[in-house]
Image 1 (cartoon, rainbow over the protein chains, first blue to last red):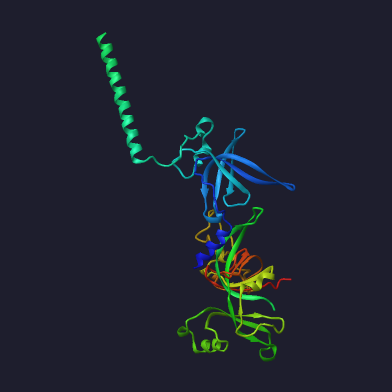
Image 2 (image 1 turned 90 degrees about the vertical axis):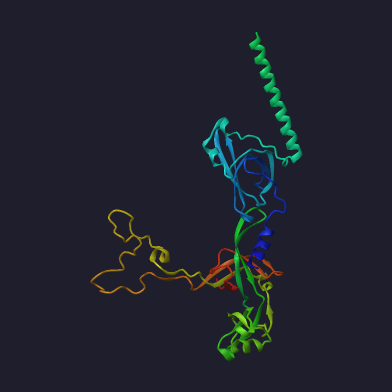
Length: 153
Length: 210
């Protein structure tokens, strides 16, 4: 019963729709900033290296390289200041926290691209497998033929 | 009337203001409370409203509790406290008070029983720094050190901070800001922390801070 009330209060301060993004994604964070009287949107681009917290306290860390210097910014996911989060590119990662990126520089920082869009169905996977196998046998045969040819000569 | 209610601490969380500031809040389940008795200067020597919160099973209530509640046609209550008043009030015995009372109130005081920590040493209880970890300190790392001069008074001064029971006492936190009221769920959201565990009983009154 206690939790029901907590849920209610937290729900009131959470966004109904939260943009879906994963660790390793390169995102554009649209931040509302006040300049005197006028409000404008500033875009912060970088790689999501960590997520933490739950409910209203959920945060995420975006890392980018500015003039050769690593900059990390931690955003509250449900803050009204965050107008939007747009995923530009998805990275293939095997960790929930990408703190190891802090120790890397240059080309090593790049993450392999991941193409989200759901898992392939069983039939598609099987078809892909047979195609790969056919290609492999073909290459093998070609090599064998080439070897035989060179031996003859 | 000086506004006050009884309730229960639900827990802490944070919410956002439209400009993006996060506010740390405590959620309080506040009322509805039944007015069990009105204390008047003529009869009792002071003015107060006696409130009851959270029904108790009749069979687990004492005969006295049952009789007291029966006078105002209510169930026996688990948590009964008085809210002191400056003068005679307009509330009547048997009336039910809800959290809507706080709609005009900006700041409140919250009274509760702090979490009990048992018999603790001076570091936890009074924030002493303890003795050094090295440099020849021998098994005295969490000791209070000296408790006063030696031969002259030949006794320890009164009021010296010592180890002892920590917590599980009545604590009043004054001047907490009311953030929001939810009358449908009897919720009161206030800024800051409140004594006691989640689910603990608390008394909320409009602040007496000037």
